[in-house]
Image 1: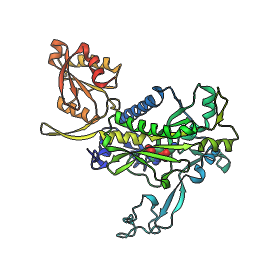
Image 2: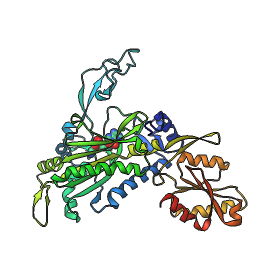
Image 3: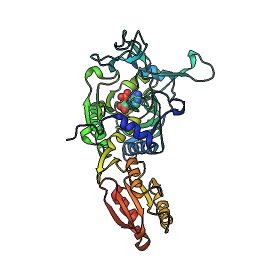
Length: 443
Ligand code: GAP
């Protein structure tokens, strides 16, 4: 059993991500902006693939979940009702000497942070005070309290307030879920570990509405289903675990919660939360809006407020897990190679096509193959450097298959198909290349 992280230090992933165009620091030419990141050409593909895989599994392949795309800025009363304005806080402590601020529960009491002003001494931290994580702005040209609005700290509330709209406009039957992907914002006191904790991030959340007496059954179902999703997409199961929350960890709305945790280079940490939210949110919004947020059974006329099970994860954190878990350093024929062993569905590029030479008809043939494959897959064409170097480049980008046009192609219409993980190279007739790729990629 492998219970060590895929890589010793997250710095290795940060530097590969920058070098190969997965993730860049934001506004880098101006010195960067703390906790903000941009996805480069390869990273944006991985992120799109993650979102697509989640949407396919949570919405498209199911009969009991529908989608939604709610606005980021919502009526401020939403946040009063949800409890975020009063209670979405973290304990903030400040050093009386240097002014550095920390999240109290992120500090190791036995090794407090050292004070940059008072060298060799730890920070002199004062009493903790509650700091609200909501980003505040104003809607319209005048800045005053009457038009204060907030950037949503979770996508979930957009789902709760649209509960009656979805019920009235679609043919959902109890139990059913509403799923959403989108940006959320939290003014985190301490951001750290690359894209693990940032102030602007994307979430993928689903609220599953069910009969109160069925909530615990669905809670078990969603815990298993969500853990399996990561495993099916190639994440090492030994680096995944489900950890139930202790009572004192539970959020104000939740009666039970378990985290899917991943073994990052900095230790086991939350990747996804699966929470029993009960009827907390629908009841609060009914109270604050004065609208009835109930389910009416059409056959029995029975009405009740549904209970909710919520699987909620961060898209950026998920991308970080796929990137970190795929990372591998190996030795091939006495030479080191770095390879990202992405699942084909997550890999940013599925196939790379190379002409062995830049003459003898190789480029024309390779271009023709590339143009044909582009119709089906995200592909790349590379004719620079020697063939070994081109393979290494694709290994580092996580491309599962490379197709090479060589001398034999011109004679017998076959190409070399090279497998990223096994390094096996075999000849495949051009006529069956697509069929072969469907077999090995799975699509
Ligand atoms: N609606 C429930 C909710 O938002 P949460 O545990 O606060 O629950 C869900 O957030 C997920 O969103 C987390 O498991 C994590 O993956 C992601 N997430 C939360 N805060 C984040 C942050 N500051 N940066 C990146 N991802 C974050």
